[in-house]
Amino acid sequence: MATISESIEAVSHDDDLVESLPAVVRGAVAAAPPIRGWFRFAFESVYGGVEWLFGLVSIVVLLAILATIPIANMLSLGYLLEVSGRIARTGKFSEGFIGIRKAARLGSIALGTWLLFWPLRFLADLRDSANLIEPGGPVPQRMTVVLVALTLAISFHIAWAWFRGGKFRHFLWPAPLRLYRRVRAGGMFGEARDNCLAFLSSLRLGYYFSLGVRGFFTTLLWLILPVSWMIAARGIQNPPAAFLVSLPGMLAFCFVLLYLPFMQAHFAAENRWRAMFEWREVRKQFKNAPLAFWSALLITLLFALPLYLLKIELIDREIAWLPSLFFVALMLPARLLSGWALGRARRRGTPRNFFFRWVARLGEIPVVALYVFFMYLALYVSWSGAYSLLEQHAFLVPAPFVGG
Image 1: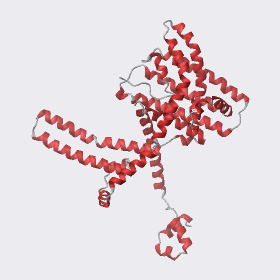
Image 2: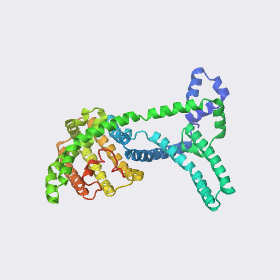
Image 3: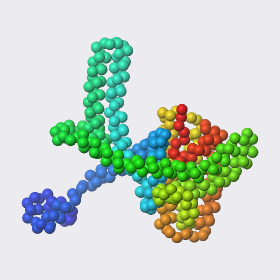
Image 4: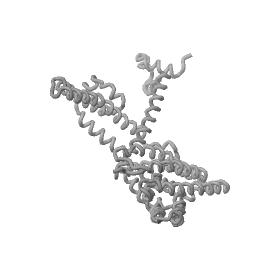
């Protein structure tokens, strides 16, 4: 016996039968979604999953590059703050993966353009080699003409692929018939301009930059006192004396660490300057989800510790984005978990059992103490010395340094 979906599909393909149906039934058949086969459904699911993973990789690479560019690094920080803030605000973990599809589109544009320029590089190397063997000869001259023609053709193909949307398949096949029809229709420049402006507007760069700048300076206010204390104590020549003098600053830093990841999430969720200093509100939310807070704090500080090893040696500015990849890749999950913990506490609304609250509260003490201790030891191997304390990649810009 045929299923209902098969019957609808059969009716929708029979024009005579559709015309004989009543108007209401005819409208329902016309509005019925097309029935997709299992193979197409599986292909689209796999394709969507691969595109999402490619977008996730692209967003990490993009944030790593932005993190090493002065001023533009505020965009990277703003995005990471929005990740935790949006999860805390909505209570949905999936809301933290912001702009993944758009990042996939930008990644495919960059990858497709880079791959199409490879034949030009290869041909240019051959032309240069031929010119070394026979300077000014007919072979290098002909290769120059071919190189110029191929450059124009590939550049036009890249521009057409960008115009079509920049998906990776657009770089593989130029679709000449579609190009011919589109050129005849006219208005390509205006459409390209409008699409670019709409895409740039959808990125909300101004919002992320503003959030990053505000988050940077308010976070710096929390860090400046304990960090300055430890930097000043580090100037003492006697190591045991320097450690003892640093203890008040280290204790103050431990207190800040207990609240800072969640105050940043609270600040991004509320989008208010004052929210960054409402530590009592964060303390109140801790009672609602103590184990979630402890887990988020543990992962944040645990993932931040290995990154101090990347500060041992100065890296050239041109490749500074490579170690920054590790910073972003490890700090992004930490931001997700901070927002998840705060969002979980907000949804619950009532304090947890006294036992769980104190287990989590006592469990946070060794976490922050060990982090501060190992961070202090890292000062002796860091390229920047005591001033590396200002590079708090777990809370500020996710990049360790900018080389000379």
